[in-house]
Length: 202
Length: 202
Image 1 (tube, chains in turn cyan, purple):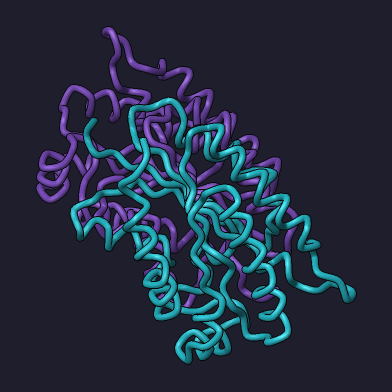
Image 2 (tube, rainbow over the protein chains, first blue to last red):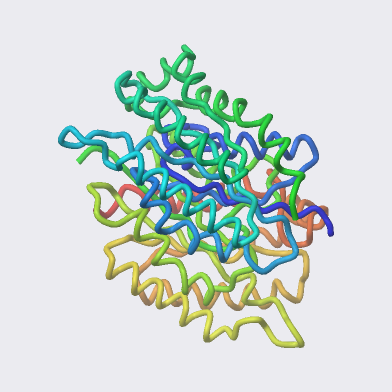
């Protein structure tokens, strides 16, 4: 088989690259680096603003199917959700952590059934320290969920919450999304796992 | 209302930016230029390789709805399909031109009903001159369809077929898709219509 890698990046506004004036986001930077290393990628970006993990779980398969199914190529899914789950509305998170985990687990099971290897990237940090604690808790749960399914997981919230570039760009933006430098940082955090994961599988 | 523009770019592999090592494609270059001009854009790219206009018509609404509906923002759709319709299989095009037009007209009607202004970008050129003639014929039909619906249309096939940069990159690539310079050219062709179209409407 010739090299034909097709990757759906599924998730929320961070996956969509909201706030990046260069319009690459972290998936674009990751794939451009892959191209420079001689590994072309067809990149489908399926991030939707404001969506919780449950909302992503409701649409991801219908959107990935026409992009990944039925061809002689390497189908892949990179999944990143969770920040919106932890946003509090009337004193409660938009999605209970158990529901977040159930939604993630459902996607992992569905991807395995479809024959699509998955790389999960954890939820990043925002400007609000209390929300970052909830994100860190969800990050732990997601890491364990992925381990239980034998899928690779890339935690990023601790590194980003401690990074001055990320913090400054998020604070200067809308309180959630970074700019170009922050997305470059996030791409750098994901790259080692991506490079181990891409060549494997069908 | 604060400025909050959300655009779904719907179509085929050219919309997805296949072949661009910089991973911007023409929608990314168009939106990055818009940001430099002080108009941020949330960009959702919904191009799928190999899809005909009929295949795009079968999924576009379900994919645009969670991205555009129900919020206090400017919802927009940029639509570009048609090259795959003109690919011949066993001596006949994959989609009859009347079916291409019907699929496009259906999307224009649906978008108007949803309250989403549409900008249609015509199908670009490939390396095969006979196919480029079929694309030029479809381009005429699409232009008339859009005029009939009062929607703006940007023809690009004639300019691209005559452009040495486009021709060279497509020939050096897979015979259909350009590289970074070709996508920059295509973005430049679309930009004047985009700049007239973006500020209007809800």
